[in-house]
Image (cartoon, rainbow, N blue to C red; front, side):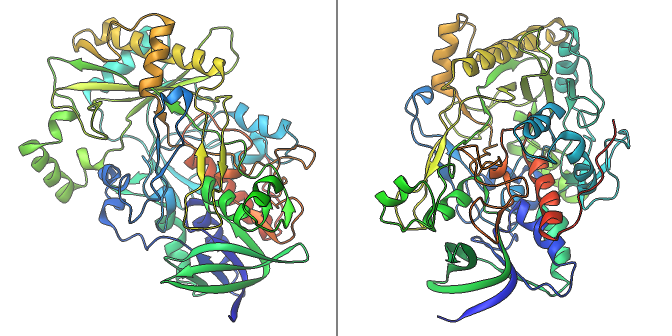
Amino acid sequence: MLAETFDYIIVGAGSAGCVVASHLARDRNHKVCVLEAGPMDRNPYIHIPAGFVKTVHDPRINWLYQTEPGEWTGGRRISQPRGKVVGGSGAINGHVFNRGQACDFDSWLKRGNSGWGYTDLLPYFKRLETYHGTGDSVFRGSNGPFQVTEMDWQHPLTDAFIQSARELGIPANPDYNGANQAGVFPAQRSIYRGWRCSPAQAYLHPALSTGNIDLRQNALATKILFDNGRAKGLCYHRGGRQFKVEATREIILCGGVFNTPQLLQLSGVGSSEILNDLAIPVVHHLPGVGQNLRDHCYIPVSARVRNIKSLNERSRGIPLCMEVLKYVFGRRGLLALQPSLCYVSWKSRPDLTDNDIQIAYAPASYDANRDMQLNDYPGVTCAPWQHVPKSKGVVQICSRDALEPPRIQPNYLQEPTDRKVLLAAARLSRDILSARAFSDFFESEDQPGSEVNTDDEWYDYMRQSVSTGYHPVGTCRMAPVSDPTAVVDSELKVHGIEALRVVDASVMPNIPSGNTHASTLMIAEKGSDMILGKPPLQATEL
């Protein structure tokens, strides 16, 4: 089997892969091959903001992974949708743009990852975005390819929620991606002029015009090829046939938190015990591969409302037809919205220095027995979660077949402290919905219901209802080689292997305090400079 040769091979045209390909292609002398397991991003539901309700279940563009049953999921499997399409999970996510807190990234630095503190990373956050808002230019970018916008419409039930939070002493925050995340605030989102701003649209499609990117869709990478400890090529399946490509400079893995460790393990890089059990020759014993899986998890706290219509009523019948017309002729209305319209970032205890809980809010409520289906009565929903859970899980291959999904066990709520913090967030959600400012609309609590009050009753409810926040990270942890969980160093190079890097959410040492898409794009921006041998951007002085 003859191998085509490129300077760089990127595995995965997801959020990170689109960014990296864009930067590498700026040098017209670079030949770049991008392997993407899914199709081109032509599905219209990708680009319509409310289309996430369709893409989250679509096997044509979604890996549709599921977790293993767990003690604190009541034996249930939890869905783990991941994008299998050009644009990756950035093509199917919920649009919310949230960098996290400065302390998140400073903790990365303290783990021995030089150059990864908040002031080091802020210039990359700024470089990637064009922020259509009134934020401080010290913190916000105005020239980047990725469009970040403010809400251009606010439901009265969202106004009431914000006032209720303020009534409880939680301040309004005009820019949670600025100096401080604390407070209550409308969501910033990657929706621009009524369309999703995906990494493919922002980065990859413009870069394809350079002519030096060879984008191969429906191409599943199955094995990394090595020569004396150096990554030299890849095998991939496409259209029922096997192909091989080789790289003269580097191979960059951007497959994401599940697919990247899977490919490493299939290629002989990982725990020798796991590899030996599957008769996979060990190229390099690296036990951290697939470990340290982190994810946000939430429980729904919802209520029926009165004296007002929520988004539920707009989602069916004649009102939905009107919303479709609004979108077709003005790119506005229900179809131009993201799932969560407002957030709270706060503390579970007053003695804490940093916020440790977050609440996503929507003036809509979901049928507990039908996934992603809105109720046929007016309602609102809070989704409380813990910013930085301590529970950690694992991603592990089950066979030598690249088509077989890996075993995913996030171990949600395994740590008792995680349960306590989530409980505090859930009770705060209940308090906000019960505050005076919301009283004109509050009718009754729907989930979990007023009969749930004691800690044990809440914990039982957690087992029944806890679900993913759709933010898995950490399975190829960035850390010094002395750390037994380390997979890559601070330049994102795989320990013990030459010419192989990981540039995606799997390298995060720990999960940030917010939706993880913004930080994934930032990692790809910084990682691109590292691949190209550029000096880091000047750290911000604060």
